[in-house]
Length: 485
Image 1 (cartoon, helix red, strand yellow):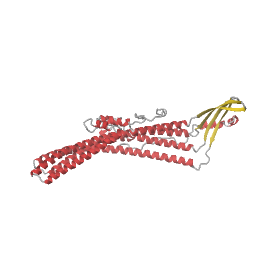
Image 2 (tube, one colour; image 1 turned 45 degrees about the horizontal axis):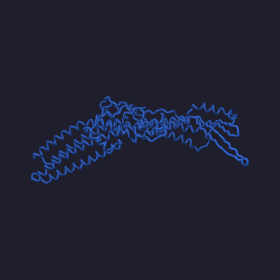
Image 3 (cartoon, helix red, strand yellow; image 1 turned 120 degrees about the horizontal axis):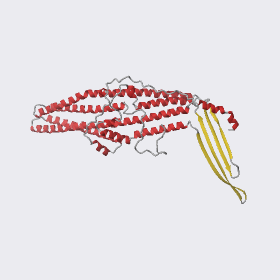
């Protein structure tokens, strides 16, 4: 652009600077979670003091924490969540860059030879260089809203990483507890099989001696076969749980089995913790809800991005060029001026984009509200299950002890010939059923604690940083995480 034309348009640059502080679209306000004022279900321990921080390290079995650490060290889910964080951070860097001037440069050199007369030729060199600059003035805040949305999505991806970590820890701990419970059930069936095998052998001797009928022998063999089948099935379930732990931890199966044989095989017992009486405080501990809230913030900013497209856009551009050769003097040229783009007709597509952005915001807000309801439900259900298992624990233990005494007394009477084999087998089944119920109840109680840990956020706190995976990462140009926050 010529200098005279530039003088006639200073108002355009001034207008751009004056409007640079304007940003269309709604200013985001965090939605208040619609939570009840108090929990309806009874609180465990009457609200005894405890901590959710690294709850998996607070079990009386150190193998829980070790398995969780192994899973975190090489988790594809955590690696994927971290990659999503870096992707969101890169998007934020790009969004910020759109509001800054851009400068590009280029240069060239050319050598040429020209024959003027036979035997006479000249060689010349031509050199040129150019700098181009451009800057889109953020008249109506499109760049700022885009950056705002990108920043919110970074927060959402960080919260997703924490939610993945909480879920991974809960799944590892739950699978390990289930394995220990499965092994205890297998031991119970193993002991019962040994007892039934002895009864079958004793019954066979009595049948051969003519003191018992052949039907008693058939009943004894049937009971032994049934228990043996149940034991094989139970052991199969334990093997499946081992495979699940191998999958979750990414460890060598032989190494994992060596770890599992450590200890006395008891069900790991969790530490006590406090459950806040105000649900709204608990809900702020959930990383999944934090992620949903950040999605709402990003959707709100996207409305401003769409609305900014309804208005004119202003950009400044300029260039400087220099060229010279052996036979000419250096020549310099430059240009500088604004460019204004005004949307006149687009078939309603830009207004449709605004409506779509509002609809996306409504979807994100609905997802957040539903997430709050689901979180309240999960906590309430975990509290109810815990209260139920606690209330049943004493009765289950009493039933186990008394049925076992009844069986032993019946077995003694059977050996003395005062009870039938049918009565003995009924007493045996009752005793085994009571023992299975007690073990299952103990296992479920620990599982409900884990569910409560997860429902309460699993020890996550707002603004907690995410950690890159310790396993090897693919090579990148910088081999460093993005520095944007």
